Amino acid sequence: MRNGILYRKASLYSTSRLVEAGEERNHDMRVINYLRCYMDISHPGPSVVYHDLVADRHAVEETLEFDAVVPRIGASYTFYGTALVRQFEMMGVFAANDSQGITRSRDKLRAQQLLSRSGVDLPATTFAHDARHSKGLIDRVGGTPVIVKLLEGTQGVGVVLAETRKAAESVIGAFRQLDANILVQEFIKEAGGDDLRAIVIGGKVVAAMERHAAPGEFRANLHRGGSAEAATLTPKERKTAVLAAKSLGLNVAGVDMLRSKRGPLVLEVNSSPGLEGVEKATGVDVAGKIIEYIENTAPRGNRKDRVGA
Ligand code: ADP
Ligand code: MG
Image (cartoon, rainbow, N blue to C red; front, side, top):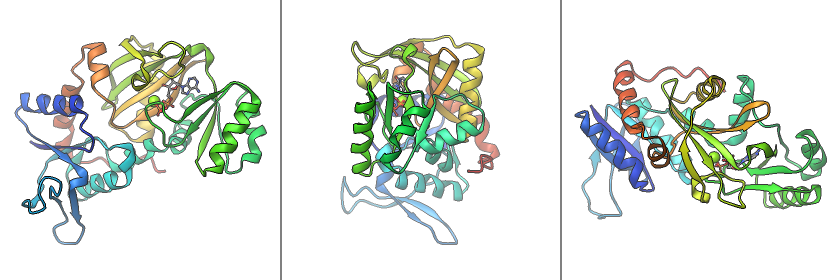
């Protein structure tokens, strides 16, 4: 098969592992910076053209012909990245995650609404337009301490712990003043700075790790200095992770959960989970599992999206 990996920032580890895993299985693998592509939408013959202006203004243009693509769309270019994935879908190219699933997972509010509808357990969460609703927003998640979270943050940036009501109200007011959209969320103290990341591929958990926040930090993100080790999930945690990926229509997902007194609670679902942390912590060939998933599924074409929101 001819497979394209769509990326923007060279996450060297993840892309090179996918190339390696594909080549081991005799596929043609290409790594394509999607910002260096443009689209021809018109009928007949919608296409994607690769033109590397950065390397050379006069570089030869190339029409991309793939059987499947693995999207690894960066958070800052979600609009263009998902439009390009959709273009490939329109051309009948199989996408490991389709554009709708990626879009849903990017917006924490939309994701939480869909997860909630599917009966996935979440930390108590509120959302408002007007900072004058702060009292209700805080009360309904059980009072302070609370987490205030930017809708489109990643890597732990944009996740704030407010210990007191005064602090929470100021943070909510300040974010809203800047027109930033935020969620107010129950702080799961008993998680103790640990979280779980389960990698779900084609409806199965293939690897799981537990991440520990650095000392003095409550965010377990590896980018925030957290450390990781392999984890064994309970059956309930497995079921929750699989249901979370399914609720957003994602074939490949990194589901983040907190271990709380009332069981696993889903924080978010990532559509391009980093491979380095989880492969190193667990020893699982996650890149290989993604390629195998594509091999088994691509011949049947893109599935009709059934999430419906
Ligand atoms: P990001 O997209 O930036 O990774 P997350 O929602 O995953 O945002 O939050 C980052 C980290 O902060 C989590 O991995 C977890 O360790 C911590 N965290 C987030 N929300 C909560 C919460 N409600 N209670 C306790 N810890 C939380
Ligand atoms: Mg996260």
